Image (cartoon, rainbow, N blue to C red; front, side, top):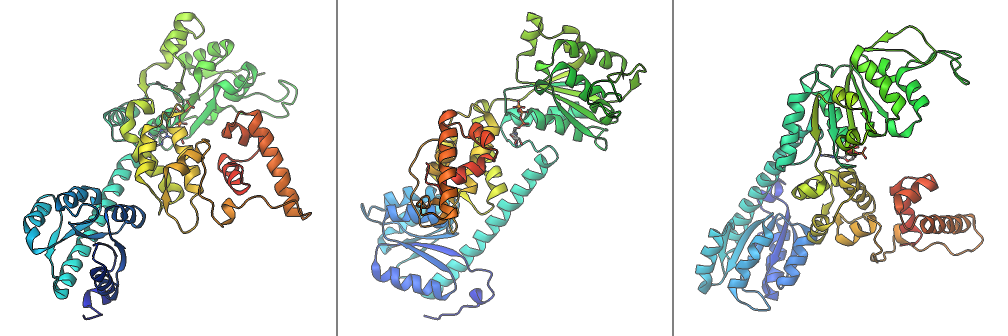
Length: 469
Ligand SMILES: Nc1ncnc2c1ncn2[C@@H]1O[C@H](COP(=O)(O)OP(=O)(O)OP(=O)(O)O)[C@@H](O)[C@H]1O
């Protein structure tokens, strides 16, 4: 057989091929012929091996003998074809199997070759198959880029009807100047919607300013929003403009507006009605031109009915109401969101089939924020040399106790023995502190990381490194 083909010397058709055939002689000859053409080749001798190799190696082209152990039934071989949907499949058939080969083509395989296989024919078909695989890849990339462009301006990922509707509403409402309330459970993208409204508005060139109303007392909130004059309270060493002033010409985002203390609700109402405000310690009212977008995970209508949120303020804020759906209401978006978050931390990585099932079956009470945290943590924990994220890695990243396979890399090495070195002493101290805080927080990684003053991903890495799974 010839060893160097023009198609391989130009580098364009070289790729990864999975050869699925149970005959050892053919495995040997076929794989060495394909390797000589410059391709990377994986070989599988039965159905299980084929599925595993496909999962791990993600070949672009699969050469598939339909009669495979254990059953040797070509019908079973046909049922495998959909499992290789992301690759270009070429079926290898014996003389008597022509009918099956034709059925395979009907099912969408690219081509078939009849055994005994003519090497020139094999080279020709494989070159075309690899070319098709490249075109498919380019098309996928272009589609992904187009999708990202559509979401790009808004950053709101999701293809379900609920998300498409939300994006359309953001576009329409964004262009107006009305105030907006964004309602939805925690972690569903309310702030993202507020930013998108700003970007779709005529104010996009102005500032987007955020204030978390739940985090501050009434006094501090007033000073943060409206500013203060020098000497108006202890520690006010100079005049300080507030966020309302800073946001002039732009958008002011009032996060967790449902937590705003009653005295501040009155002052905010006055600003919304008159467009004027008075800094703490000042007498002269000032003016600012801002569009207000407010958000809360609370049931604001119920708060109005109960009297804990002012009705007049509610109606001032509520030029329009947008709702961000819980992830449970748009489960079909989970794989897309997860893939997007994974690409951000580990561009080469992919989810295994069991990881995708786990992601879709999970409850996600913390919605997209929780999904993002789990996927990014798992992405950060991928071992060097691997690009697979499986269900166990996701479970571990989400705080479930699982046994990850031990490896000799430092990421999973047990803590150094207390041998008197500085490193061992530090590892010992870290272990004790982390154990203690994890116990105090009932295993809540986010809270433990906060108390330890490190990021959640940092904590997860330490747990793995110190063998504290
Ligand atoms: N549709 C989405 N597409 C991409 N990322 C999203 C989406 N929704 C939420 N996120 C991400 O989830 C995280 C939480 O989003 P965000 O802060 O906007 O939620 P929220 O509803 O305002 O949360 P909270 O009520 O707790 O303040 C962010 O990292 C954000 O980027």
